[in-house]
Image (cartoon, rainbow, N blue to C red; front, side, top):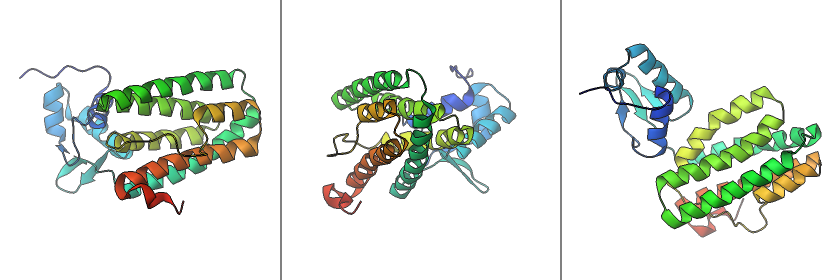
Length: 225
């Protein structure tokens, strides 16, 4: 069988296969098989698998190899709690930086999120969920990048793919009462109020936490948040 063709790096290809659900939870990925399938040596295959493990998408089982990791409710809630802290701090720094035209950029990204969200609601397809999640990430990562804090940027990148992997299987209702929308956050950034921006960014993430709890435990599960 000829090597499988792909676009981009081996790591990017395998990540996308996981996020789309083509490589399902519990699937084993072995260096030899990956190397033969894609016509590469074992070194790049091993490096790709190790990188995906560091992103939280794979787990390495002793004497068994790498396996697509199951994302649990606890994983989601921990990721959201950490994201709330990091993004809140990033929003504060960004408000202080007064980056030119940032608010306009964020409003454009917010419109993109709404477009992808509506498409996913119509189709229910995993690929549209991924597009929606990536649009969400682009919005939040724009704020983080504008903070100018390189460590924050690296930490956020390490959380992103686990979050997308989880949300692929879940529904998310963006209308959670008084939770700030993406447009609200963009407006707050424009007003350069660090404390308010930090508070709104954290409150926004509560919506994801509620959605995750509701997916597992039902609509009343988030009342104590």
